[in-house]
Length: 381
Image 1 (cartoon, rainbow, N blue to C red):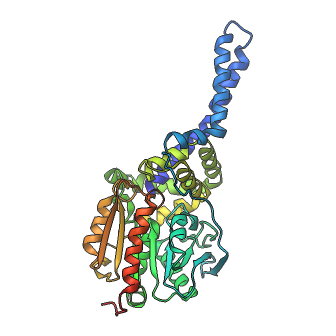
Image 2: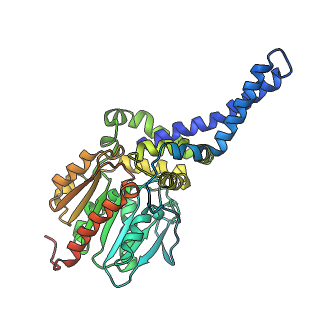
Image 3: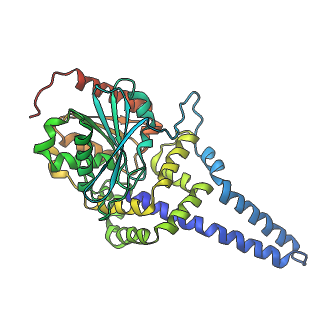
């Protein structure tokens, strides 16, 4: 998301400054110790040591200071699939696919958001694999999927990847579940390929997503829209060019806890556990900055506003009361303009409510899916 990109970039610059400040304090100590200014020198030394410890270990302090203890909470962690597959796309990218759950049952295809991977579906995998066939894809350049050689990260390209996953896996009448950019991908697929795909899709779950360029439905939307062309677009290209250096800074931000502060403020509502916060921050850090930047450039050209009334697929919209990256009114707009849509609001919740409010989100999705599975099959109007 553009705002996340911008704030992460600022945090990365701060992380780059910390070692220089520590080195300056060390030089001050070296210059003034054993002189009349020895007290000043000692303070500089203590400051340098404290800053060095913060650079290396700050995340352990930060994540506990800004999180809550939730007794009995199942904490997320990286998981691996026993069965996985991949498909090679015409643009040279390889899309990673992982399978969970029971074969020969209702298929649910999961599409994660920008700056994440399949692993972001930790709670959904645990909840739904008991009774459904789960198919999860990594977005291009994220997780175990590779980047397209033509550097195309448009929503149209990723929607074509999703269509290829549906065909490759042989999923019949799947339910598509997308988070953030994953929801945009699903909406693009429905909008651009309505005659081919709609009758083959049983239902859609759109979680914390939007129907248009996210700068228009984000926190500080007027400011973000105004600075898109003069600031955000050039910043994306700057990040792409300096991606290796910025990625190193991003890991420094992860270690010192700056990234945790950004992730907490922009994507959680304040009831998350320390491990949920660290898990989400780690997944974001694993994504190359160039991929995040190109993803944002792709979202700048995204808009399916006019096509929403033509989407007849049963749709569940999951919104969050404090979502700063896709504000709740974007979900309300989709609810009003997608004919066969229903919506739930997670309170309190933010952009990572699929982690923070996973129980409520999964229960709502379970009810929606069961209604679809139990209903008699009928052609989509």
